[in-house]
Image 1 (cartoon, rainbow, N blue to C red):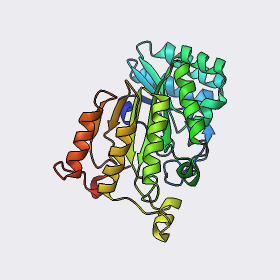
Image 2: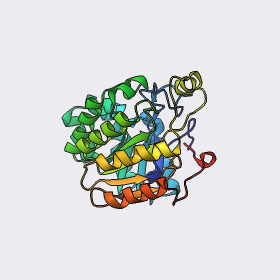
Image 3: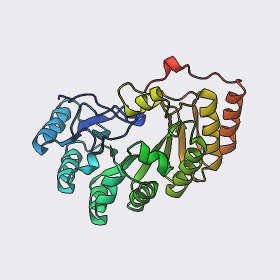
Length: 289
């Protein structure tokens, strides 16, 4: 089986079979992201995808998890996805879950019936990027949708029985809008009440519009102490009972995990210890996207 270009997956899909149903990202305009810039969004032929599934079945029929790549597999036609799910179900009877990235737009554009059909066919979990709850930040970063639309998409996915994992990015508002970014992100996460919340930390990648803004001085990158202040403000204001919270990505200065809302105070205490320099932070040179 051949992969096309760089392949990305959520940390929790480390042991999953990755199948490229699509190539690239259907949005691909985010000012901070370089993940899919070398690819034009493309839906692969059903023949190629089913051939990949068959090949992997012949090598390892005991697959228990499948992740449909690249950046927005849900944007593909529903009938196409149903064929993939049906074939995967037949070839891998011990498969426990099939998941994919999904942009807010792809969720909103799917009909209620289509989301139900895909869920019944075996697509069980969606990973969606919020990035920020602040519409000013979302517009500047080229997210392509408003916070209200993202929240609507998240609620729609949950309403149809999908487990939902939502990510946001600390520091994305810069020093200029750190408070608005933190509070509005917390509000949006609270409204969606997803099963999983992942908090990443902003890294500046060469060649992106964001890097140019930093060089020009129109975006001021928060330092580690300011990031921790923002994270604390976010955690203090998320009201999302039952959400599993993780801040253990390679980009993060501080590793943090718990279940909301019960572990909120414990996490706040860890952040406060880090702000008092009683906990070691990951050096900038060790942080990776």
